[in-house]
Image (cartoon, rainbow, N blue to C red; front, side):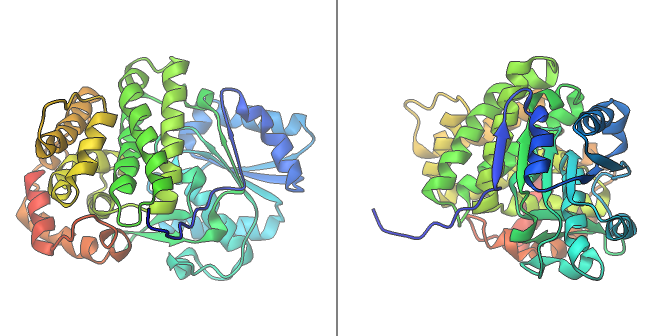
Length: 388
């Protein structure tokens, strides 16, 4: 085996399992925390999870403040308007409670707690000079992997383009992954975030930057998600299914945090930023179409994906087995009611709209350069057109 260097990074602490939320006060105190800001969204507040977390922290003699106004696909302006609150109140720890949007906002507020300006000043790779307040991530969905990544994504309102802060300084200090926190996640969101996690696993497994370490995490993630997403979507109180999805999402997040993502996310970011399609739905919808183009770059890997998804590939050629992976993703989307056509979400969507998306895709060098197959603008257009 050729000797190579495989860099690998993770949060300082990952705590996984049903009931893990109860470890939160201890972890805050281990970070020398006394005054905490809990960042979440109105949906999490409405189902009582925010109250539950606040009560737990107060019972453990911690001072708690909350920001419960996180918006889906958070716009830059919403983050910057909250930065003053963080800078003025001398918090010790920021807790991100929710899906990827809440955790990303917590990461962004950590950046702005120690660095001047606005969050757009730090778009790009390793542009954050100083580490801010410690971050503890508490995911309430099984999909984004934000609890273990160095990324935070925000929407520029003017251009409607999703932009990313990527920095080692925003990897959460602690990730507490408690499947019980996902029990209230509704079916549509369970499906969308689950397909997002599957995209993370498949993209990172086939990425240019994949390593034997990330491939191990990604393949296990594919197995868990393929096995449990249907059950978690339609039997949401099933703790076994929720635990399987939480573990699959976590493993996929670890893989993407190190191997990265590719053309699926580049295309989904452009579609979501321009037309408001939710992140998970956009990734799930586009995943099989991008896989169909990418598979010729590594038929063996795509055949392995098919096996990980439970497909019987005995007696098939390598190409036939690889196609099974594409078919399996499409079947999963159909089963959990994720649309396979953009036109079903955006009536009248056609070639003109596709051409509006292509510059955003091609400018996403971080993702596109990590794709297993080099894609031209014409090929990106063809993939979008296939998905209409």
